[in-house]
Length: 80
Image 1 (spheres, rainbow, N blue to C red):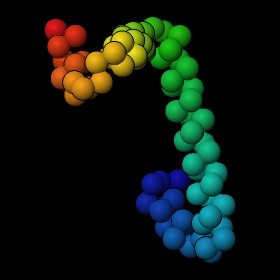
Image 2 (image 1 turned 60 degrees about the horizontal axis):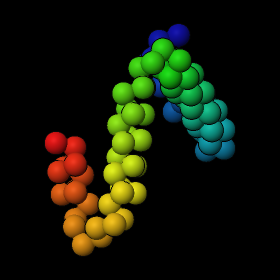
Image 3 (image 1 turned 180 degrees about the vertical axis):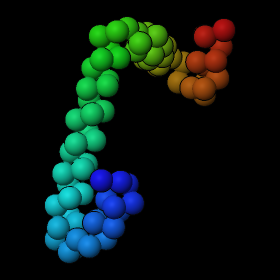
């Protein structure tokens, strides 16, 4: 079945069937995304981003001692 045939079939759905199809497709896409994230995490592809997020969290917590400075400025100075 081609993409155009699938599109045409979707256009034939009743509003109720379209809602059911959308719910199924949304769940299916979410499962694929979850599997991809899991594979990326296991392979180490996310390690850099996790480390960056943890460092920013640490800096934000540290900044609580200097609330008068804008957060963006504080983070920029601390990262450089």
